[in-house]
Length: 242
Image 1 (cartoon, rainbow, N blue to C red):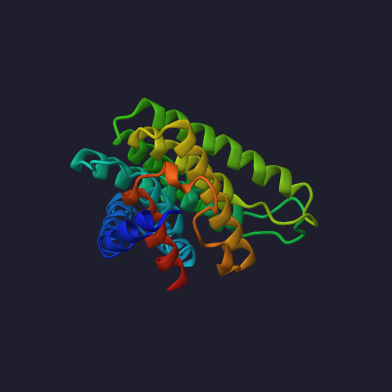
Image 2 (image 1 turned 120 degrees about the horizontal axis):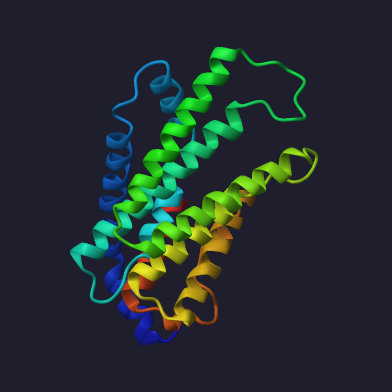
């Protein structure tokens, strides 16, 4: 990256960090609002899973990817709804895949807990779809549906090979979230390719607890606008502070 770009990115860094934090707080509020209708025992089950999945890294990745120049209030609202939708999808999948018995498990589960997990997960799936629809983008809804299918299939394949390395759900959700956010932000194919590569790095960094992967690619990042690079840098700093 050139010295000019580096200077520009440094100047934008504080604003990008503040914007990321404030938008992520709104994503969290959208999640809580969408779950407000739940009553016990479903609310306790969902609250426990929601606490377990913090921080909201999937929403943060979407917010980092879904920026364009110039930015608009409409795009901001869209990426917030998208970020909340991806997090809600992760929540629903977590309830179904982590609280239900796997084929390899020999332990029985209480039928009331099983029924609650199924109903709570289905509720979250419906809320996730509703949040995706609020982006008013057919592309987002389509990407969202494909993500649900691919992640479900990934978990199902892993359930039949329990000795294999755990399925990396984040990697798939990051790719889907970035693709949808890129469509909203009008990314060029080259910019989308760079953003997807960053998503893979972030997923690998989280999976392997390797902070050295949290950086912009050595080559190709110049296709992103300074404000976009600053958002990704803000994401890296936010992740390192967790």
